[in-house]
Length: 85
Image (cartoon, rainbow, N blue to C red; front, side, top):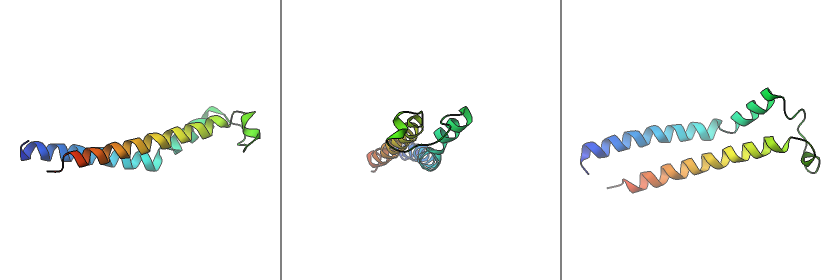
């Protein structure tokens, strides 16, 4: 791999890392905003009442976005480790 190719890969990886950081910071806000714009849940209930209503969707979507941001940050760290000379 030449230095030019390595530099291009590093630049793309830096951009991907910035996107991962933004997704990690603002990712869980997205499902919450979508949930309240769609009108569900009408009230957020905690366990055990949340199983009866629709507020479980809010918690599940926030957890899934958190998992996606974790996977994205791990992918960036593995990619950075693989291009180290």
